[in-house]
Length: 88
Image (tube, rainbow, N blue to C red; front, side, top):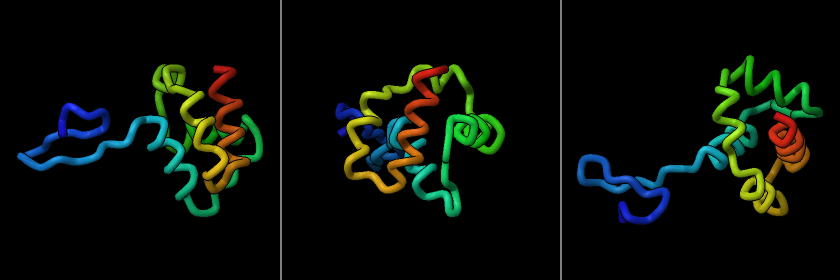
């Protein structure tokens, strides 16, 4: 399975590893009490709260994130994430 994207072999066991895009969206979705209401909220969350590297953010696939929006909880927060990522 290690030949499939997202799968990694660790100690002869296979694990599904989330993409950076999925991990970031999950972090937003599953952080209790977090509602992003604008780009400034997104920047504060990304750079002050979770201290993510801006260079990493610039390489995220926003088209992939956008494709998940119809079925995702916290759509509004994820939309603001997309807007913020596209202006970096």
